[in-house]
Figure 1: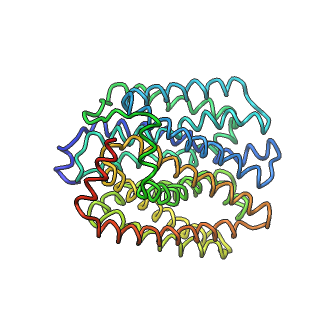
Figure 2: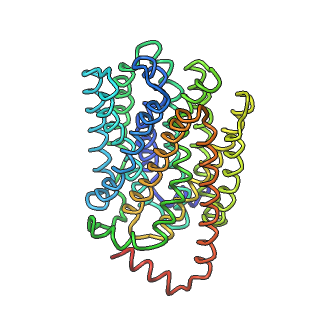
Figure 3: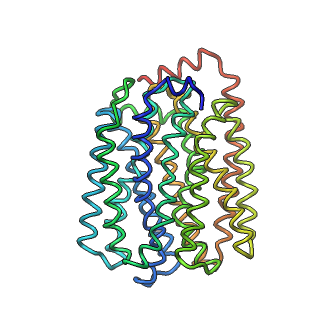
Length: 406
C-alpha cells in the first residue's frame, strides 16, 4: 500500500464505508442464496426464480439515484445512518410477518433494494476524503464491500436448511445492527461535499455522452457481477445438481475473489487509465462468457470459468469508478447514483434473462451468450471513448468541469 495513500485521507471513515457497504450488499442479494429453499417451499419455476432474485437488484438500482441526490444534499454519513436503520426495521418486520407466498415476497424485495442503494452512499463517503491521484484506490477499497454478496452465498443456504429461510431474514438484522453501531463511531462526513440541486442537477449531466458511457460500462461490469452473485447458487444447484450449501460455497468463492480484486482494478486504472483497463477486461469477459454459453459439461470446468469471469468483472468495477471522479469531479454523488443505478439494472437484466432463457429454451446458454455479446459492444464503446478523450483539448475538459458544477 502506498504510504502517501495512508496519509492522504481518513482510514477510519474508509473502513466505515467498507463495512457499511459490505453488510448492505450481504442482505441486498439475500433472496438469491435463499432461492433454492424459497422455490422448494413455494414451488417456483425457473422464470419465477430468476425474476424473484432480480427484483431487489432492480429496486436497489432505482433507489441509488435517490440516494445519490440525498448524499449531495445532506451528506453521506447522515444518509447512511438513515438507510441502515430503515433496512433493519424492514427486515425485522418481514421476519415477524413471515410471508409464505410469491406475491408476499415483493415487499421484502423493496426492503432489500434499500440496502442495495448503499452503493451511492458508501462511495461518496470514501471518495470525499481522498485527492484525485488516489480516487481509484480509495473507491476500490470501499467498493470491495460488495464482498458481502459472498457472505450471503456462504452462510444463507445452510442456515435456511437448519432454521428456515424466513428466520434467516431475521438473523440478517444482527450484523446490520453491529455495523451501524461501529459506523456511528468511525465515520466522519467528508470535507469535500458539493450540495446538489436535485433533479435539476441531473438533467445537464444526462445530456453528456460521458454519463451514458459510464452508465453502460458499469451496467456490464457490475451488472454481470451482481447478477451472477444473485443467481449462481440457483444455477449451480440446477445445472450441476450441487447441494444448496455446496452451491452457496462455490458461489461465495467466486464472488469473494471478484469483490477483493476491485481495488486492484482501481489501482490498475490509476496507473494506465480506466479506459485502457476496460478495453482489456471487456475483451476477456466476452471470451469467457461465450465459452460458458456454449456449454461446460461439468462443475470442474464451469467453476474455473466463472472464477476467471468474476475476476475480470471485479477488476472492471474498480476501473469504471476510477473514471467517475475523473470525468465528473464535482458531482460524484449524482454520478455515483446514476452509474450505480445502471449497474443494478444490468444485474436485473442478467439474473432475469438467465431464468427466462432456462424457462423458454431449457438451457441457460442463450443468456450467457447474450451477455458475451454485450461485453463486445462495451469493448467497442470504450475504444471510441478512449480516442475521443485522448483527443480532447484542455478547454473541453474545463467545459466538462463547468457542466459538473452546474
